[in-house]
Image 1: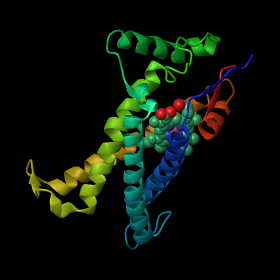
Image 2: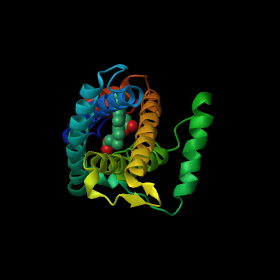
Image 3: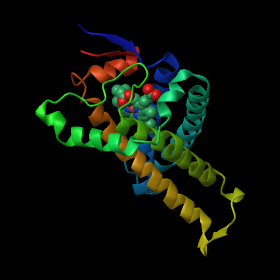
Length: 206
Ligand code: HEM
């Protein structure tokens, strides 16, 4: 019989929806700015892309703040913690399952429970993403909006260029994450089941 677990509280679903839309806008406008200049338009007019990118960046900062506070004061934060002992072994187990066992129809080594909704690979990825990569892209974005706040010369380079490069690199990694994330979300019991879960909050086990 199918068992329903309530795994995605309302605030996480609202945050996730806003976050996904903002990230899509940021990637689209970011790519557009990368390949356009004030005279040549690629996808979106340069000045519109700059404004949209800045506004979405500010909104992403606010929504990230919601996520951070939510995970600090609500039980959802417990899913973003790792017990170091044995974690590497569990990570390998999950990796081998995705590379091999999944295609042979084997059972998942870490079934979803109320206490542990992420498998070790998800847990590791979400921690790196939400506690390192997203803050890094946000902070470097703020530096690019207010460049006067930083020291002008760092390691002999104009520091704005270093922050720009760092912002591009973290933005690129998050974009790659997003593609892989959506692919992995299709690996549920049916291709659409995980997408339904992040909308209605319930994970169906069968
Ligand atoms: C169109 C874009 C996206 C889609 C369709 C999507 C889909 C999903 C789905 C189905 C889940 C639930 C399954 C699971 O827990 O893995 C999920 C969870 C999650 N997604 Fe996404 N996602 C998108 C974009 C993003 C982006 C841009 C980020 C972060 C930068 C992100 C971060 C997360 C996190 C952290 C969770 C776990 C939330 C929690 O339960 O605490 N997602 N996503």
